[in-house]
Image 1 (cartoon, one colour):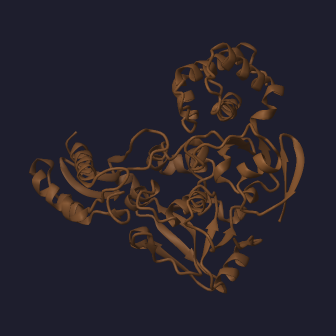
Image 2 (tube, rainbow over the protein chains, first blue to last red):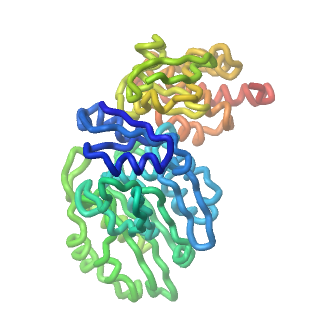
Length: 279
Length: 159
């Protein structure tokens, strides 16, 4: 296995700009080492980046919080900046893997690995996070809702890396109720059979704003716009749950696999949403 | 590639593949057989070690991850005040059955005792949630850690 360890971010970007081979970035190692063990990574080059502390900062400004790609889940769970600005994110990630993996796993890795079950994705989707993607000669910001284009397929070009995850503070405080729920076989170390994140803003029984995202229910984690559009502007008393179920069936296309079957996944997701809207 | 790190308070270095798993370096090159492999995917915690004082699964780390850092395995615990206290408590409550998960549980429990140490069952369960015992002796394990926390409190938290 070919190996490379750059001294800094610039060197990394210059190196991958000229690289023709397929490569993997090695950060915390919690996903990649499982793939190596199972024989999914063989000849690809491994580029170690976990020592690049310039990618590990949490930067605070008036309107946003910027998380470096190497920020670990333990750092997220212990960060005062995150508990002050996005307590929902911190509370929701308490059951991320286990405390042992939280110490190594990085937020950038959870996104870049591209798994539809990645815990952080439904949360970043409802928080309308943006990703800063950089290469040796470019820098662009994309919305996380546009980042995934298919199963493990993304907008990331072969010479780019995810540098920062950007969370806007503008809308967050307007939401009156928040839900994140991951359904799995047990509490610790569970890989979600279904995951839901939603934020709602209500005023006098009217739904003024609503965002919802699903994990593990499509080829990639995504926002459910048809459900959002149906709910926004309605009173709770006007909601037709048969219609919501129909819209949900159009939006999510669960698969049956080793962890669960599609009818269970659909039903559990629908129940969580109904419960959120009625209780 | 030559990698240097601190292993149980001793400076060591090794010339090896930088992607070799920390678990394999510890067992094969340093003959530290107390670090166990079971699932090899980070789910069971049998291979837990401390990396710069934080518990991690050594099966998901590559040796490059520990360059310039401190690695601590369960081997050194009996020489530490809190380690000895823990081992005595596991012993007294008969918490160890087949023993395979025990080195991992010890390392994670030691970290809990050192960094939090409150005799709080819910907190202990969360702290140990990355370690699995397939003899399923969890109650005795939780009791042991509770007992260690209480005893450590009564000594004034000396470590």
